[in-house]
Amino acid sequence: MSKGWRKLFVSRGDGTKNSLKKTLKVPEVRSPLLTNFHRWAGKERVLKLTDKEQVTEAVGNSSWDLSKNLFANLLASPMRSDKASRFKFPRDLLIQMKLVQTGNENPGKLATLMPLINMKSGKSSSYVANSLKIFKGKKPGLGQLVPTAVNDSGIANISLSDIVLDKSLFTEKHQEELLQCIENCMTQLVDRRKSSVPVVVEDWDVVLTYDHNNDNDIELVRLKQLPKDPTVIILNLKVVENDSIRALINDKLKNHEVGVVLKFLKDERLIRLVYSLLNFSK
Amino acid sequence: MVLIKSRKSIVTATNVCINSSSKFYLTEEQVQSLGDKEFLTASYRRFLRMRQFISKRQMVKESYTTYLRYKFKIEDFELKRSKLLSVSGMSAMDFRSSVQKSLCFLIKAFSISDAYSKDMIDDSHKCKKIIKNLLTVDYHRNRIINRSSNMYQYYRKDFTFFTDGQNIGLKQFEENLMRLNECLGTRL
Image (cartoon, rainbow over the protein chains, first blue to last red):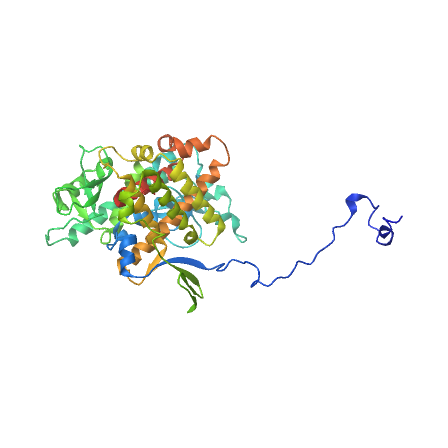
């Protein structure tokens, strides 16, 4: 009785051990000035190189001109989720897909899932890895690639049977369309390039070739025969097997002995298209 | 607006600028003269010191540490390189200078300076985005790896996914990264 008498006043359940309530404690209040709180919590830290000397020692004086580099630009694009593998990848490495309203050719269907060649902003799009191989197999089913925003809508109830899911749009037709775009870009380039100013090959320039003797389609080469031996990216378009493109590359557009030299900042669209076609058809 | 100014750092309303010192970079002399073991530990320490600049978030910091540990201890870079690039286009890569350049890449990504030219500031933005993207992809890879035990071998040691076409997106990402490495002489 002497020890357990308090239980009589505050009865909690049947008084067994399990039902004993934990006593609530008010946390001890301490001044953040007295505790060792993180001094700069929540603030972004940056390294400051104070003077020119330090800059030279730490990173060198010259810039790398990454804005002119194709790969740096691809890798630095914002991240999007790849629907097939559920990884996140830089957007420019993926194919963007959107639902487009269907015309009369498919009665009873509301929309078509289409791969886009030029990225468009705006909601309800989804992304998948840029490769022909992915669509050759059974997985992923195209229904898996439909933008999720479709299901989230509270107003319209669109089921998968209302959407045209055509694999040929993603395989042959996408390839053809890419090729068509590339050809258009090239013909525009021919029109623009009237004067024959000799080009100077610099670092990270892209060289288009159409060369059956070369096995690689994407290659990094250091051209030692040229002044300052620049590193260039060679894109070999032999995989497309297209005569008009061969004529354009080997004849009309050729502006240097190594091939068609393009600068990234000038012909960004063409370079991106060619690169994505090569990656796609690999 | 500067709130606190000290010898080591400047605290402003939004961020903290840590003044750089030789603790953060490898000088040319160090790269040349240090012994193998000293060089490795020195560079590892410097890479790890960059951790505070990577992100405010603990999770991102941790994935950076994991990434770094993998890079230094386990990865067979030459194997990865030979699997991704064609043999003819490869040039021999000097280990020490590539480590130094990678550190340089990180410093570029997370540093500011009044002495930077406009091009270098552009570089800095690009580097930062690339590092962040790289860490995100690495985080996702770890997520898969943690799910089953043989995935570690698959994704980290043998790089089988380069050839079997199971994860084409990841393969393309690695290819691009390797090409960027080849351009800059880094080892990311």
